[in-house]
Image: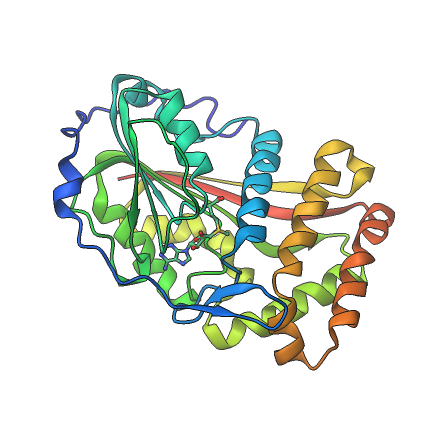
Length: 305
Ligand SMILES: C[S@@+](CC[C@H](N)C(=O)[O-])C[C@H]1O[C@@H](n2cnc3c(N)ncnc32)[C@H](O)[C@@H]1O
């Protein structure tokens, strides 16, 4: 299994609690835009997906699907370090679900979730905090602050040409000896039928003017190496889509359908299709993916600074 044989121990000592708070330089909140179908999207960042209650619910749902699929929350060999304490950063934390679970699992750590805006009021554990920030404008933290820097599912947020710089920014805020971990869904599939292929093609059409390219996510390891990481591990997990693969496949299929659903207004505007055509294509996914026994690539990569 991925990383199972790794015995490396982290040597860095935990940062002082609250250390990074002094470094915060809060960015302006991104501007929201409401679409005709009621979905809310940020208009002054490249991020493609909606920022509204439906999307919050989807992200929470997706978190549980991923946890079921991966069987764990962390792949980098940081367990021993986090048991002793230390600083954890989750970039693009969304609802904060992953970061809050990490804070509960490792009560001696200080976990920071960073995103363009806070998803919803929760009562997080005392060792979790939310910081507003924009990765593309630089992270509001001093160099060498975090022992473990995690970033998941920012494929629809970072233009292709910004990926190497974004990973250098994660590297900058990670302590020497600390770990950076990345997880992304791309656009690569196995046995995709015509509806899934069409939805991915529409997605690429919407992403292209923003410079976003989901076909390049298998390069995470290469970008970690370019940033200066060593001990780089990469793994591609082929997630099953559809009830043919049991509960996980069914849940992931629903997550995927809900994710595409969030692109409807943009697709109707940019691809010259009707909302009905878009919805019918999504509705056909379930049967199609079962018939074809479809799989979707999920890329994991980690490297040590
Ligand atoms: C698909 S969600 C993933 C959320 C979370 N990482 C998860 O796995 O559930 C992407 C998140 O990245 C955030 N995001 C988009 N662009 C960003 C940026 N430039 N800086 C920081 N966060 C960003 C979005 O607001 C959204 O919450």
